Image 1 (spheres, rainbow, N blue to C red):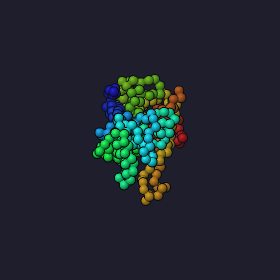
Image 2 (cartoon, helix red, strand yellow):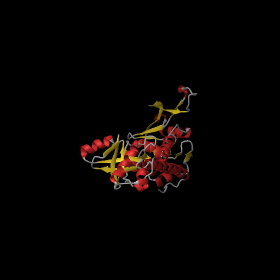
Image 3 (cartoon, rainbow, N blue to C red):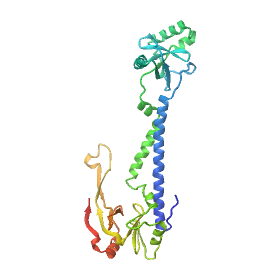
Image 4 (tube, one colour):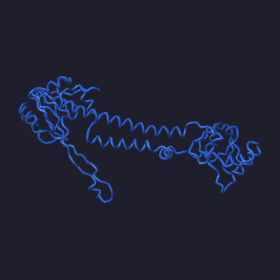
Length: 323
């Protein structure tokens, strides 16, 4: 979006807020995209349909295969069953719950990873080899080779796959979100949007009219509060462009806001000293119409206070701090 302010100081302030806004939402988009991709890839790894093909079987693969059953498989060894796959048959294991579902519903979809039988306990493999040769599915070396493969249907944990196979997007995405949360302590990415539609105590001002006020000969730029002193109004920019007309001021007051920030980590720092407490004193204005606007983030320059007292009187400033 094009910056509509022509005054040099206003333009610089709005430009800085624009860059911060773009960086914030750009980083937010990237972090959410990275997190989404981690979850999406995990979901795809687990639930995408992948049929079993004996020509591509590899033991201890992280690929999740899918196998449909519509009839009870034959148990060839304790907790090992033979199920039809790729026109042949393949052992399945850890499938008690799936077989219970098959018995109840008449069909079930198995998901699992390919594993190999432990050579120190070859009982299931020998039973599978006998099954292959007995039914003429494989013979010779193929029978011996494929008899050691089985589909392990042990429940697959979504969180385990996410953190083991796709942690990069999740880690960087969460890290970026933490950085954004810390950045919000120092600046607000929404100020730029407030500049696009300036707030005011009275009538609505357009950017061109605010430029005219700022460019008046007697107008003065206050660097401390990023504000303009003009003959007819005050222009504040810290919380978004805000025009305060002197005649609309009912009262001005400060709020005392308590903040707590962690300053250290580790066991060497006593717990009571790990946090630092500090206060900020933003200034607010209440208009004669009852509207309340935040003008500064922390205190106010003496020149602004003197101008308000000179134009509106000393009674406009309230003593002390409001909660």
